Length: 215
Image (cartoon, helix red, strand yellow):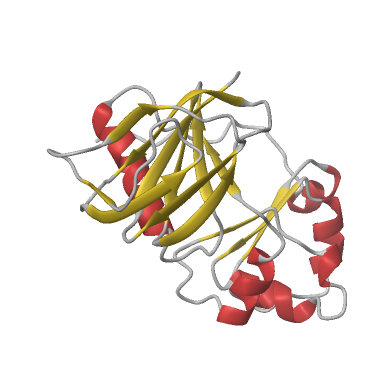
């Protein structure tokens, strides 16, 4: 049986020396003590693990704007709805860099993540890589502004997971009017814009929007 590596002899370390070091802080779902504010003020990165967001929210009543975490991680089963909604309201969109290149199975895993995230995160989630952007449109009507100067030449609407029975668009070169989109019938790829600067999409099922972006 291999032996575990042993610490170097003669090495000394003062446990509380991290006060003077660069560190990150992650708040767990445990009571916070008097050291919280000092640790928070010195940390380079601040986050909460699941129910730790409740602890942060409660202890900072009246001054929450000064104690916004950079991230909240976990399955969110112990985060209270009011806490989740408060911190979500401080962010407009979640942008993920990467996940659209290389192995096809991993690309599809990225697409699947958009479907899963829609059930736990109220924020729009965009995935970017190189010249591609994808965003999952939920059932309903959407207005997309495509006049920022960052748009590339192509765009598309991909019915992933199930057919979209009624899709209507405006602002595209090849628009749809109550069309059915489904693999094996019609998929809107290699489309582009009509120059109006605005695209509207109405769909009865989740529909993946994809577009080119300029580097």
